[in-house]
Length: 337
Image (cartoon, rainbow, N blue to C red; front, top):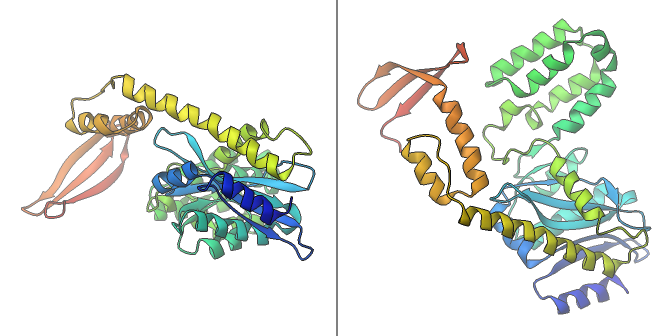
């Protein structure tokens, strides 16, 4: 079946099903993007951040499967769409499929995360904040800095600390400089290149962006494994691909219904006497409330000392009981709610 006839047939069977495709100069199919109505609805609700990548093949046509995913209000990975892409034209087709994705989602642009397609992301999502996968960075670090890892047993801990621990940009710059000097890495080109991209992976730069906790492509890869169980046939055809994908989505959404049932049928266990937690429990899902409660536990461990106070401004020194040496300044303006 030709791509156009397939698209027309699919649209006739499900008027809310979206599909777009690209062909090469010979008229051969080389890239597709498809999603259903529920995925489009989910993206409208949870599309603030998306994650995508290509790690497994679906059939004998040398095509990669690229699911585009996010996180729903139950903390589950939700699939916004799927894009089989011909490996030989990866960068061009990634851009095309991401543009198809935006067309399906009516141009709502997310915060996104991927590795190795920076130019594509800049072209398709010029107004979004692009993050790199920390797992892949760690894997590349092990390859490019293998001698340093072997020579210095403390390097792995310091490298990880530079990624996650700094709370200000100044602290990150100081820690990075110390690491460069301590391990004699000032001439390492790969590490310098990673430093030039620091705003895309160092966690201190992500505070101003809502990424729903996504730091790696792990969720994409778990979905890849999930989909692979449906795309088991090495010679699966184009129409069968969509049919199998639809079956996968039905099964996937059963887990959402179960999570919703658990939220509705269980009473939340509160951990503090604070009204803010009680109010949150009325609106949050079971999973989101547990995440909120972890933040409450961190607040309980803080000491606040008033440094200055007047009718409009209150300035506090904030200390962590576990690390009283680290002092932060909190400024509260009573005129701004």
